[in-house]
Image 1 (cartoon, rainbow, N blue to C red):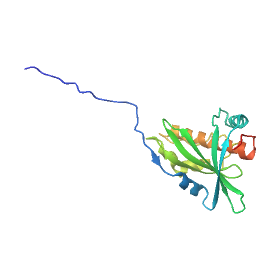
Image 2: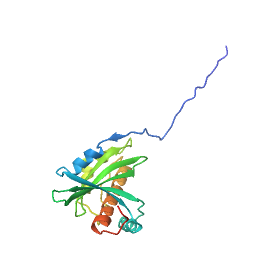
Image 3: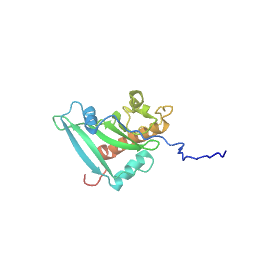
Image 4: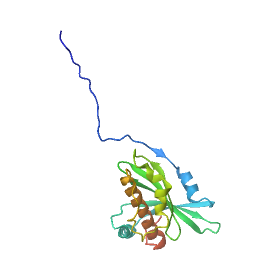
Length: 183
């Protein structure tokens, strides 16, 4: 009797996680959440000048590479801004986390919401107890006391970095009015 062994090809990938994409808010839903009592929302694309990027980098204490930001501005009946929203993307562990930051006219954070989450872990950052840590903060805040979530460290860092970028850009563009490129 002769034994015959057939080796079947198998595939084992260690350390790879399955790609997961969960949409929590569409852009329209985000705008309605950001500006619930506003009838007019103005969209403003801002092409950043080198001076603006440098000013944002100085606030952040690190390089800021964005070239363009799209802001949504809620206007009251007198065409006065009630708030500003920007959508950001920050890499979590492997994939971008898409989120919105709503900023009051005085530069303080009013709301932060996850719009699309693409990681298999760390999704706990979308819950209100974590997000409310950003409320009321502005560009002067060091953001060094955001509580971590076990198993979501990279998502926490990504969200913190994204909110910090948003308030720094808001300060430079709308409060300090550093000269930019037509936009």
